[in-house]
Image (cartoon, rainbow, N blue to C red; front, side):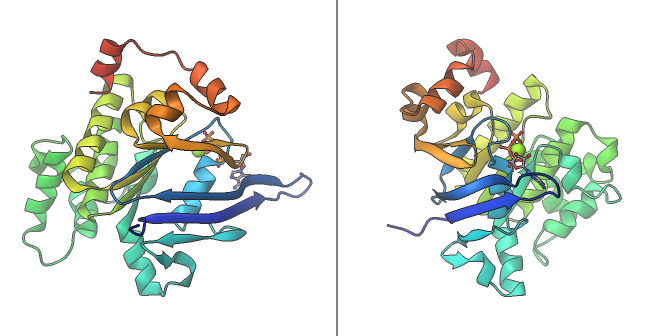
Length: 264
Ligand SMILES: Nc1ncnc2c1ncn2[C@@H]1O[C@H](COP(=O)(O)OP(=O)(O)OP(=O)(O)O)[C@@H](O)[C@H]1O
Ligand SMILES: [Mg+2]
C-alpha cells in the first residue's frame, strides 16, 4: 500500500499544571491520512482533537509516539527538511486572524507564501484570491486583515495556504467563526480544492454534519482516545460505538434539501 501522507503513531500527551491532576489529553492514538483523503476527527469539547492536530503540525511535542509525514519522522528532520514539511502541511484555524500578521497587507501575506521566481507575484496572488472568492483579487491586494470581514479573512488564510501548494491541510474548526451562509461557501471551497488539487485533509470538527458532507473517513475521539474509525457514511449512519451513537443522536439531522443548500 502507498505510504500515507500522514501517520500518527501511538501519540500520547498529558498536560500538567501545578496543583492540578495531570490531564491525559491524548492517550496512545494512532491515525493515518492517505494521499488525497479527507479524514474528519470528531468528538466533544475537550476530547483532545486540537492537541492531536497541533502535534501533527509539529507545533506541540508529544510525550511519546511519532508523527510521520510522507514516510519521514518529523522529529528526525533537519531544520531545512522541517521547513519543507511545514510547507507540505498547512494549517487552517478557526480564527484566521491568529495566522495572519495584522501588519502585513494581503499582497505581502501572499508574497511570503508564493514560490519565488514564478512570474509576477501580484498576478499569482490575485489569481488565488479570485479562486477563494475574493474577487476581483486585485482589489484586495492592498488591504490589511482588519480591513476585510471575518469570512474574507478566512478566505485570505485559505488562499495563503494554497499558495504554498500543500499536500495536506490540517483544519481545526475552520468554519466555527463564520455564520451559516459563509460556512457553506467556505466548506464548498475546501471541497473544490480537494477535487482540483487532490489535497488531503485532516478536518477537526465537533460538527457531525460537516464530517458527513466532507469526509471520506471519520475518527471519533473521546477523552483522548480514538474509539471508532471507518468510512464516514458507515460511522455516522450506523455507528458501532455507544459514544459515537450519542454524538450522532445529539445532532439534529438536517432535512436533505436544507442540508444541500448549506453544504452545497
Ligand atoms: N496548554 C494546555 N494546558 C493544560 N491543559 C490543556 C492545554 N491544552 C489543552 N488542555 C486540556 O487537554 C484536553 C484536550 O484539549 P483539546 O483542546 O485538545 O480539546 P478539543 O477536543 O480540541 O476541544 P474543543 O472541541 O473544545 O476545541 C482538555 O482537557 C484541555 O483542557
Ligand atoms: Mg479544539
